[in-house]
Image 1 (cartoon, one colour):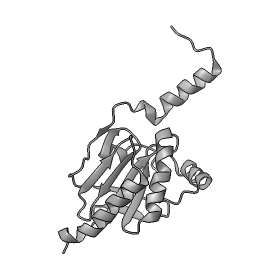
Image 2: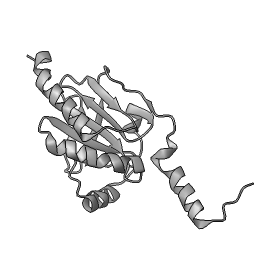
Image 3: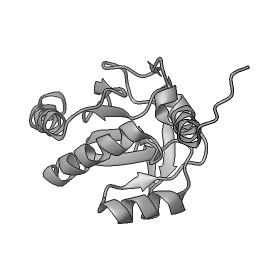
Image 4: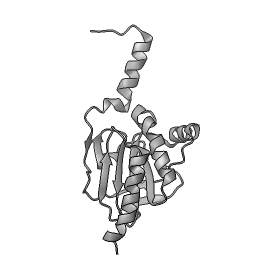
Length: 175
Protein backbone atom coordinates (compact mmCIF):
# COMPACT_ATOMS: atom_id res chain seq x y z
CA UNK A 1 0.00 0.00 0.00
CA UNK A 2 1.29 3.48 -0.90
CA UNK A 3 0.97 6.23 1.71
CA UNK A 4 1.18 9.90 0.86
CA UNK A 5 3.15 11.59 3.60
CA UNK A 6 3.43 15.05 2.14
CA UNK A 7 0.45 17.28 3.11
CA UNK A 8 0.53 19.25 -0.15
CA UNK A 9 0.46 16.05 -2.21
CA UNK A 10 -2.50 14.80 -0.14
CA UNK A 11 -4.37 18.08 -0.63
CA UNK A 12 -3.69 18.06 -4.38
CA UNK A 13 -4.89 14.47 -4.67
CA UNK A 14 -8.08 15.28 -2.73
CA UNK A 15 -8.79 18.25 -5.02
CA UNK A 16 -8.14 16.16 -8.11
CA UNK A 17 -10.44 13.36 -7.03
CA UNK A 18 -13.22 15.72 -5.94
CA UNK A 19 -13.28 17.95 -9.00
CA UNK A 20 -14.66 17.69 -12.50
CA UNK A 21 -11.23 16.51 -13.65
CA UNK A 22 -12.31 13.08 -12.41
CA UNK A 23 -14.85 12.96 -15.26
CA UNK A 24 -12.30 11.40 -17.57
CA UNK A 25 -14.57 10.18 -20.37
CA UNK A 26 -17.34 12.76 -20.92
CA UNK A 27 -20.58 11.21 -22.13
CA UNK A 28 -23.61 13.17 -23.32
CA UNK A 29 -27.08 11.82 -24.02
CA UNK A 30 -28.06 14.96 -25.95
CA UNK A 31 -26.19 15.94 -29.13
CA UNK A 32 -26.47 18.46 -31.93
CA UNK A 33 -29.59 17.71 -33.95
CA UNK A 34 -31.53 16.32 -30.97
CA UNK A 35 -34.54 18.05 -29.46
CA UNK A 36 -34.06 19.46 -25.97
CA UNK A 37 -35.34 17.01 -23.37
CA UNK A 38 -38.14 17.86 -20.97
CA UNK A 39 -37.04 19.26 -17.60
CA UNK A 40 -38.18 21.78 -15.00
CA UNK A 41 -35.91 24.00 -12.89
CA UNK A 42 -36.41 26.87 -10.49
CA UNK A 43 -34.01 29.72 -11.18
CA UNK A 44 -32.27 31.88 -8.57
CA UNK A 45 -34.83 34.67 -9.12
CA UNK A 46 -37.67 32.27 -8.27
CA UNK A 47 -38.90 31.85 -11.86
CA UNK A 48 -39.70 28.35 -13.06
CA UNK A 49 -38.43 27.18 -16.45
CA UNK A 50 -40.20 24.23 -18.01
CA UNK A 51 -38.81 22.76 -21.17
CA UNK A 52 -40.19 22.71 -23.76
CA UNK A 53 -42.99 25.24 -23.09
CA UNK A 54 -40.84 27.99 -21.50
CA UNK A 55 -38.17 27.81 -24.20
CA UNK A 56 -40.18 27.42 -27.43
CA UNK A 57 -39.44 30.30 -29.80
CA UNK A 58 -36.22 31.33 -28.00
CA UNK A 59 -32.55 30.59 -28.50
CA UNK A 60 -31.47 28.78 -25.32
CA UNK A 61 -28.09 28.31 -23.66
CA UNK A 62 -28.13 25.63 -20.97
CA UNK A 63 -24.88 25.10 -19.08
CA UNK A 64 -24.12 22.56 -16.36
CA UNK A 65 -21.44 23.51 -13.85
CA UNK A 66 -20.07 23.33 -10.33
CA UNK A 67 -18.12 26.14 -8.71
CA UNK A 68 -15.76 23.52 -7.26
CA UNK A 69 -14.72 22.44 -10.77
CA UNK A 70 -11.59 24.18 -12.12
CA UNK A 71 -12.74 23.75 -15.73
CA UNK A 72 -16.11 25.31 -14.85
CA UNK A 73 -14.39 28.22 -13.13
CA UNK A 74 -12.49 28.88 -16.35
CA UNK A 75 -15.68 28.59 -18.42
CA UNK A 76 -17.93 30.83 -16.28
CA UNK A 77 -16.31 34.14 -17.37
CA UNK A 78 -16.75 33.09 -21.02
CA UNK A 79 -20.43 32.36 -20.40
CA UNK A 80 -20.79 35.67 -18.52
CA UNK A 81 -19.28 37.59 -21.44
CA UNK A 82 -21.59 35.89 -23.95
CA UNK A 83 -24.56 36.57 -21.65
CA UNK A 84 -23.68 40.26 -21.50
CA UNK A 85 -23.31 40.44 -25.29
CA UNK A 86 -26.59 38.73 -26.12
CA UNK A 87 -30.15 39.89 -25.88
CA UNK A 88 -31.26 37.08 -28.19
CA UNK A 89 -30.81 34.08 -25.90
CA UNK A 90 -32.14 32.69 -22.65
CA UNK A 91 -29.23 31.61 -20.43
CA UNK A 92 -29.71 28.96 -17.74
CA UNK A 93 -26.84 27.65 -15.70
CA UNK A 94 -27.79 24.48 -13.86
CA UNK A 95 -25.66 23.29 -10.98
CA UNK A 96 -24.51 19.72 -10.68
CA UNK A 97 -24.62 18.82 -6.98
CA UNK A 98 -24.28 22.30 -5.48
CA UNK A 99 -26.49 24.32 -3.16
CA UNK A 100 -27.70 27.89 -3.64
CA UNK A 101 -25.63 29.37 -0.80
CA UNK A 102 -22.29 28.24 -2.23
CA UNK A 103 -23.25 29.33 -5.76
CA UNK A 104 -24.44 32.73 -4.53
CA UNK A 105 -21.18 33.25 -2.63
CA UNK A 106 -19.14 32.35 -5.73
CA UNK A 107 -21.28 34.56 -8.00
CA UNK A 108 -20.87 37.49 -5.58
CA UNK A 109 -17.11 37.01 -5.19
CA UNK A 110 -16.62 36.83 -8.97
CA UNK A 111 -19.09 39.46 -10.19
CA UNK A 112 -21.28 36.98 -12.06
CA UNK A 113 -24.88 37.84 -12.98
CA UNK A 114 -25.83 34.75 -14.97
CA UNK A 115 -29.15 33.18 -13.98
CA UNK A 116 -28.67 29.80 -12.29
CA UNK A 117 -30.58 26.92 -10.79
CA UNK A 118 -29.09 25.29 -7.73
CA UNK A 119 -29.43 21.50 -7.86
CA UNK A 120 -28.07 19.45 -4.97
CA UNK A 121 -28.27 16.24 -6.96
CA UNK A 122 -27.68 15.10 -10.54
CA UNK A 123 -31.33 14.54 -11.51
CA UNK A 124 -31.52 17.26 -14.20
CA UNK A 125 -27.90 16.75 -15.25
CA UNK A 126 -28.52 13.03 -15.78
CA UNK A 127 -31.24 13.83 -18.32
CA UNK A 128 -28.53 15.43 -20.46
CA UNK A 129 -25.31 13.58 -19.66
CA UNK A 130 -23.57 10.88 -17.67
CA UNK A 131 -20.26 12.66 -17.09
CA UNK A 132 -18.24 15.74 -17.83
CA UNK A 133 -18.63 19.36 -16.79
CA UNK A 134 -18.71 22.08 -17.82
CA UNK A 135 -21.27 21.08 -20.41
CA UNK A 136 -23.05 23.66 -22.60
CA UNK A 137 -26.02 23.09 -24.91
CA UNK A 138 -27.26 25.72 -27.38
CA UNK A 139 -30.73 25.18 -28.85
CA UNK A 140 -32.50 27.11 -31.59
CA UNK A 141 -36.04 28.48 -31.40
CA UNK A 142 -37.52 25.13 -32.41
CA UNK A 143 -35.73 23.48 -29.43
CA UNK A 144 -33.25 21.64 -31.64
CA UNK A 145 -29.77 21.47 -30.15
CA UNK A 146 -27.52 23.36 -32.54
CA UNK A 147 -24.30 22.73 -30.60
CA UNK A 148 -23.06 20.91 -27.54
CA UNK A 149 -19.77 21.71 -25.83
CA UNK A 150 -18.17 19.40 -23.30
CA UNK A 151 -15.39 19.96 -20.78
CA UNK A 152 -13.13 21.32 -23.51
CA UNK A 153 -15.20 24.51 -23.26
CA UNK A 154 -16.39 27.26 -25.55
CA UNK A 155 -15.24 30.87 -25.85
CA UNK A 156 -17.53 33.87 -25.47
CA UNK A 157 -16.82 34.79 -29.10
CA UNK A 158 -17.82 31.36 -30.42
CA UNK A 159 -20.95 31.29 -28.29
CA UNK A 160 -21.98 34.85 -29.19
CA UNK A 161 -21.50 34.16 -32.91
CA UNK A 162 -23.62 31.00 -32.71
CA UNK A 163 -26.38 32.80 -30.78
CA UNK A 164 -26.37 35.61 -33.32
CA UNK A 165 -26.58 33.16 -36.21
CA UNK A 166 -29.43 31.23 -34.61
CA UNK A 167 -31.24 34.47 -33.76
CA UNK A 168 -30.87 35.78 -37.31
CA UNK A 169 -31.78 32.56 -39.09
CA UNK A 170 -34.45 31.22 -36.77
CA UNK A 171 -37.16 33.21 -38.52
CA UNK A 172 -36.59 30.93 -41.52
CA UNK A 173 -37.87 27.98 -39.48
CA UNK A 174 -40.66 29.93 -37.71
CA UNK A 175 -42.48 32.16 -40.24
